[in-house]
Image 1 (cartoon, helix red, strand yellow):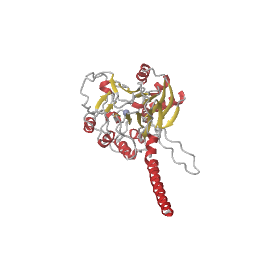
Image 2 (cartoon, rainbow, N blue to C red):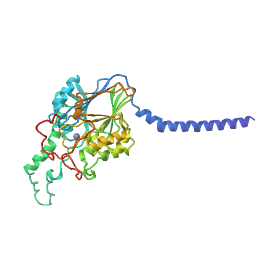
Image 3 (cartoon, rainbow, N blue to C red):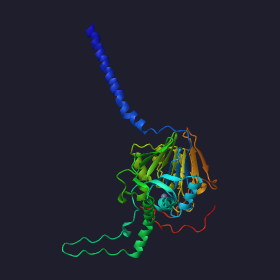
Image 4 (cartoon, helix red, strand yellow):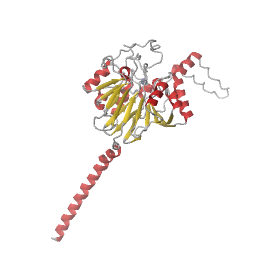
Length: 386
Ligand SMILES: [Zn+2]
């Protein structure tokens, strides 16, 4: 009898060990990653996101003010837009920027950065570590290969016209880099998975660009290299979330869909100012935003936002709320992190139908590297106030 009961007891222990082991494994495999990536609880304080008006040309600049007062500026509009951004910072009583994120080296995102850096303390600068994409035809010629026993021959000087054209492409970037050094901000490269604690329960997570970065030969028709390698970030605060993809386009969206990333978000800053090359249907299906924000200028000649993107948005969520900086001016979102408590205010009321896109002034469907400066000529002299 004693032997049998001992045997029964051993069996029960074995079952218990198996059950505990399996439970532990499930916990380690699923619960631990969930617990580790779970955003901290919202403090109940107010988080603000200002999608700034850096028009009338295209550009992005987004200010985040966390419940604890930490600040993030994502991009700084085009060259000359520093003043408008500094005014917005002043209006919001911002004394310093804890983080500046440069999504990619295009002037409509980094052009105003040096002006901002010179006037307000910036502690940390994050970007993708990539410089502007200078076309090979404008790149300086390589010096000829040295031949043994012969005097090295100097490279032919770059023709002035080409130097000037290359200079236009790189000037804003050089100024941005110089400004980082000059103000002594800490610089770091955006690494996917990095989380920045903004205090009060708000958190910013880097989702892209993912290695290996896109190279020029991998860019699909209509795509653009700097855009493809945009820094993509995600803001979480309690029940609130916002996806900030810079100018990332379809091929970057598709790359992100293959990764195990948290893409579902309440608010989506529409990629690349609403370009038809971004916001693919399957990407929008995954993000499933309740609110979509297009940051674009009323003078843009690229057809931003594109009608197809606006139509896709409606297919994904017929109740999606749309906001556009070209029609609304600055867009301000406030939330205390509670379920659907976000409130959105705009600087002005839209005078035209939000759901009508703009027409591109040039067909670019067969081109790669769509944004080539000068392609569209200078912007119109008079603002079309309609
Ligand atoms: Zn842009």
